[in-house]
Each structure stands twice: as structure tokens, then as C-alpha cells.
Image 1 (tube, rainbow, N blue to C red):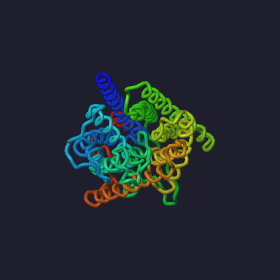
Image 2: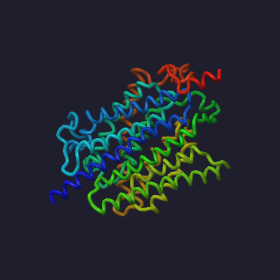
Image 3: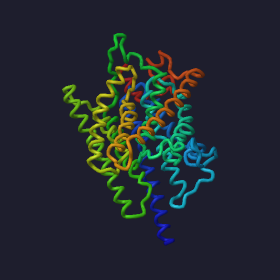
Image 4: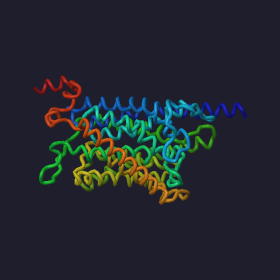
Length: 405
């Protein structure tokens, strides 16, 4: 029996490490997707933000965040301790668990980067990431995965891999920031019309989407959380297949809908349709292929209609991240309450509201303080020239720019 326990310990720890490495690779996917869907003159800052936010998340979640999320039994948050102090597990290596959890934190932060792209200053953004990864994300995570259930309020809430806990948290934090930040210059006319601002590199955006799709197998598959029995592997295989089905259905649905609505297939919508399906299925990737199919189809429809809806509200989201991660984080979590007989819809709604309200209010306060103290938006001239030259002194494609002159 002792040897069997050792084997389970080894396999589960390996699962966390391997799945975590796949999720880490999603950081590259976010960077490529965001760079591809925005303008060349801002690409260096975007790439800098993405590698910096991942690095900050790794440091802050280790120093503070992991303990707030998993340390102690406080109803609101865990222990205020330093660097995983006092946390250990019998069935897995504690550092394997930390590594798997920290890449999820970085994913939530990555969502924000795309929403505020092309007009937010670099350092205020990174300071916000410090607070998000050290405090905001871990506190709300303590209510669900940390086991507190917010003193019973979130009892029965189910989110398998983080449609709400990860993706909608990034969405709510981004929404709070973009409301204070405002739209890019020229995005909306005085008459209320929307001026499209095309991305600079659709092949790059497509590559980013495929990288994210691949990483999602680690995101959802690793969230099985154990790999010691045949049943565990059967569940993991189902999770992989469901995850893949939701993305595929989302892509095809978005292609069909854009053809019907706009008489042309919109690649950016197809990409976000696939990602929307992935976000939606994340809350319940173990519920079967038909549920995954429905998750993906509805998610793509929500993306296709949410993108112009946010534009009507003059909420400028260059990459469509609010439609993908916030809207479909909510949808995917509700879908579990609809399709899983062991989970009530009311429990899901209460969890969505608790996490959303806390994240939005806390994030709004932090963004507002940053805006008042140091400013969060670049100057109009800097926005016109591009953030890259003013924030970094670099150009993403300097030879290309010189050839244009």
C-alpha cells in the first residue's frame, strides 16, 4: 500500500508539472494573439506587458497569493504568511501544486492586457498586476478552490477549471480598468459610429489561438487533479475531448454566423469563437461531448453579438477579450448549473455574483487610485505615435518602418 501511495504521489505531481507547463505556454499564445490583433506601433509594449505580467504573477503568488488562497480556514481569505509557509500535501508535491496554480493566476492577468491595449501606460498596468496576483485573485479563489465557500454563501458552487475563478476574474478586472481608461482615439466618432481599427498581423493572431488551444488541454486536463487510477485517466480523456469539441464547435459556429450576418467569414470572430468555446467549457469539461458542443455553439454566438454590443456601449476592447473571457466565463459557469444535475443554477449564480462583484469593485478601486496618483493613460501624442517609441524606445519591425519612409 505504501508503494501504491508513492506511485499516486509521483503521477499526480507529474500531472501538475506537465499540465502547468502547457498552461505556461498559453502566455505565448496571449502575447501572439494580442500583438496580432493590435497595431504594429504598440507591439513592443504589448510583448513587454505579457512577459512581465507572467513574471510578476509567479513572484507575487509565491510570496503572498498562494497562502491567501490555500492557507488556513478563514471565510474571507487564508493566512497572511510568506512563501507557502505551513502548506504541505500528502498526495502531491507542494511545489507542483504551486506551479500548476500560478500559471492560472497569470492567465487571469493576461486577459486584462488585451482589453486595455494601445493606450494604457506600462508601469501602472504592471502595478495593477502586482495587486491582482497577490491579493484580488487569491482572495476570491479562497472562496471556491480554497474551500471556504465564503462562509457558506457559495456552498455548492462548481467551477471545474476556472470559467469564473480565472477567466471572468480577468474580465471583471479589465472592465473596471477600461471604464476608467476610455477608448482609443478615433475608435468612435462624435456621431456614435464605430471606426474599425484592424489588427496588424492575422497570421500571428491565428498562431496565438492555436497555442492557446493547445495550452487549454493542460488547463482543463490538469484540473482533474489526480492521476493514480484508471478512472482518473478516463476522466482526463473525456476532459481533453470535451475541451477540443467546444473549441471546434465555437470556431465553426462563428464562421457560419459571420457569413450569415456580414456575408463574409470574419477570421477574428472565428478565432474568438474558438476561444469563447474554450472559456465556456472550462467550468464543466467533464460533462460529455454533447454539453461541450452546446457550450461551444452558444459561446461563439455570444462572442459574435457581444463584440458589437460592447462597441455600442463605447467600451473599446481591441482583442475582444471581454466577449471571450467575461461573457463566456459567465455562460460556462451557468451551463454547469443547467446540464449537471448535481449542481444547482442558484449556486452558480451566487458564485458568479460574489466573485464578479468583489473583483470588479476591488479592481476599480485599485485602477482609480493609480489613475489619481500616477495616471494610467498615455498622452495623446504618445498614443498617436505609438506606445513603443515613448515607453520602450524600440520598434517591433524597425526595418519595415524605415522602408516605408
